[in-house]
Length: 527
Image (cartoon, rainbow, N blue to C red; front, side):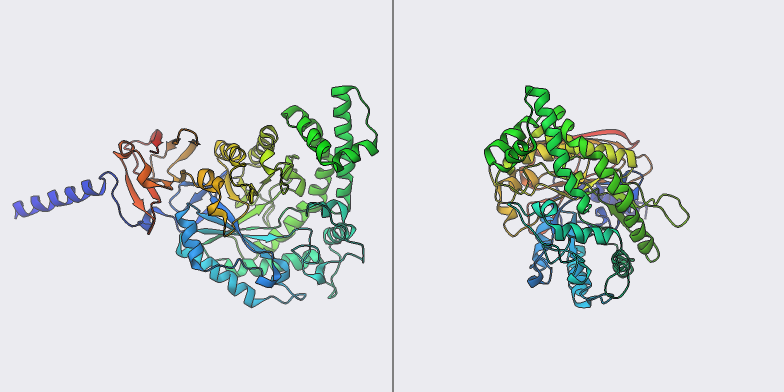
């Protein structure tokens, strides 16, 4: 009997040792992957208590003819999992959700349900983003026509789609009336409709663990007061030009300079240093502060109140105003619960874009300007004591090879600040782009036991490093996503195991906890 017991013990030990063997090739064991994500302090954390890096893309359609649904099947979500995506920012459109006042589109919601289920089947979490561009479906996407009170004002477009914010009286007036909560045809205020819609959505997904939260409004714009920003920026640039050259430029000269491609690029070069860019962009602070404190914050609180009546489980993602995209310091604050205390489940959902975004000069983004923008985002996150999720960045589109240095610079900043992120945006061609293959498709610490101190991909040398302070009271492994396991230097794997994602060379490096926790580090080399 004792011999038999001894044999059993030896067999158990052998099994344990085999499970720790180098480069063990197995299907993904779902016990290493979380079933939910929430907020704890300034971190996203999973149900194992590990710090989470949200790594993702935007997925959606602004096309009404497509029913505002990105046209794909479950194969998309299986592909995204192989590409290391653990979170998607999923676009939803007010026009599709509430085609008539107070009437919700169940067919559209069922299509959304289906995509959430496909994401869940591939261990991908979802943030629902109420998207708008130029406020309304009348001008781009967003609010339905019944919620677009433009008072018959003219709609004017420019060379770039976003010019409409500053040029279109119809867009500006529609925003004005939204911020004023003007009543729709049924006598209910526009913001009240918006809050009721969010409550309807939150009630539907209150118990859904795949949905981790709600991005309340995409890039809120102030309306007609935003027109002042053009004059403020031109005036600020005129002051800077005088400071640098001693030459005084008239308003007409400044306006003409920004209308001409060559002179505009010269001006952008002038504000490509941190000092000069700060001198110009910071002069928008007062205008943005007034909007965010007077209009945006009360709207966020109204929607938060409506959501919290039916859902106390999910994260509220708060964006800065449209101007925060380019580094204007934000004045948004945490929303509060019914008792007046700060809501603990809130994240700062910043966007970060250089001034050349959506133009053919996207590859010419200034390193100093982008660093300034991401530094402002980081400062605001620290001030709010919230986790930061850069819900949009990039927008490189067809700039496949030329934009690689720009993409590396932005990714270095995202990693240095430990931001969660969602690249803008997914297309059927994205994974064929050189910048995707060489920069976005990278190793990263998906789930870290303890506190992540830093991590970095050196894209030139093909190395990955990370440091973390491991918890001494949590036995869950640290999990690092690896896009090409076969390229890992085998010597780097001697103390770990790997788990492959089905039908791919991608997978996870599983790092078991050490005996006493404490400072740990990892260095990987890709052959």
